[in-house]
Image 1 (cartoon, rainbow, N blue to C red):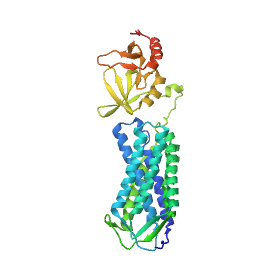
Image 2 (cartoon, rainbow, N blue to C red; image 1 turned 180 degrees about the horizontal axis):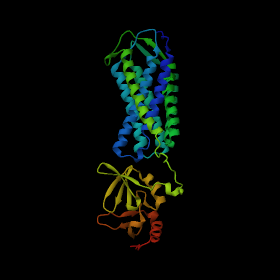
Image 3 (tube, one colour; image 1 turned 120 degrees about the horizontal axis):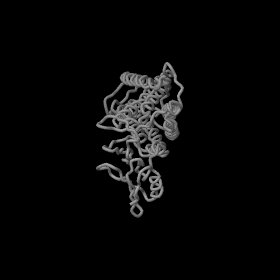
Image 4 (cartoon, helix red, strand yellow; image 1 turned 180 degrees about the vertical axis):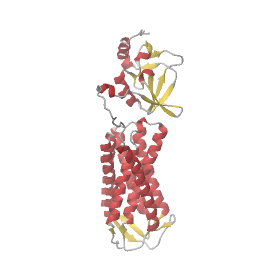
Amino acid sequence: MDALPFTHNTLLVIMACLVAVVAGFTGLSLTRSLSERPVFEKKVSIALASVALGGGIWAMHFIAMLGLQLPILYHYDAAITLVSALTAILIVGGALILLHFTERTPVVITLAGVVFGVGILVMHYIGMAGLELCRAVYTPFGLIVSSIVAIGLCVLAIWVAYGQRTNRNILLGTLCFAAAVSAVHFLAMSGTRFVAVPNVTEFGPRMSNEVLAIGVIFFSFVIFGACLWVSVTYLVREDPAPDVVAVEPAQDRTPPLQIPCERDGGKVFVSPADVLFLRADGHYTQVYTGDERLFCVWPVTEATKRLVPAGFLQTHRSYLVNPSHVARFERSKDKGRCIFLGDGVPPAPVSRSKLKSIQDALASQVGAIRAG
């Protein structure tokens, strides 16, 4: 069967690439500063970012497909087209969950980039399967090159955007993401032939280009609106300059360290001076004060980075102790524990490798530290 000649509408190609840029910027911006937000807000932000990024992949693909010019009339299967959109959103959501609900190690960042790339590829080929009255025939070149480019550029985009969460890195990551989405589509298309298929096997209701265009235009407006919304955070200064600037020592301008916690569904900030110890709880921590236990969104690695310089001691890989609240130190053979004042406050264990250093550190504190 002879292959059909095809071309692309230049204006729609440009619009498709622009939508990819806007979707990438929106999605990556929505996930800024999530580590200090309550879990519910974190989940909502990730869900919205998944819709922006996954929906942007879908919108870019079908805007470009609206610009596809074939010598025959063709339609789309509405059910398969919907599946392609939902698949992209779910796969991208999985990558964002990896980045924001696990420890962000180099392996996790690379794996998230691979998942992003797979999401773009899966969306593209499911979307192409929705064509009716013509069929896409793929070549090894298109499959292999588009796959390598998709995964490679997405890994680069995630490393750039998540290596350091600065505005500059987010903008550079946006460009890498848009390049990945656009390059995958057009590289795959360059290795694709189209043949006419007179008999149609419908999976779902038929959808014309006109109906698809309405859906794509609506979703594109949603993405552009979300882009305007998140852009405000780049324009508004967090610390506006006062009318009169007083010259102060640099240390006086540094805000005091506060630990973000949750109490009764609301967000509260606790001074480290009021904390007895912190205990790792999965990817989060539990904060113990004199009379309550609070949930903290920091993982223990983040808490260690912030609190050890403030005087806390890491007595165990899962525990950080405020030495000023330790009533006594008990040691039994190769184990130890820190005891605190107050009813119902559990002790904090001390691992064998840290026994000597913790005992010495506690002995230097003001107060009586008794070794048991």
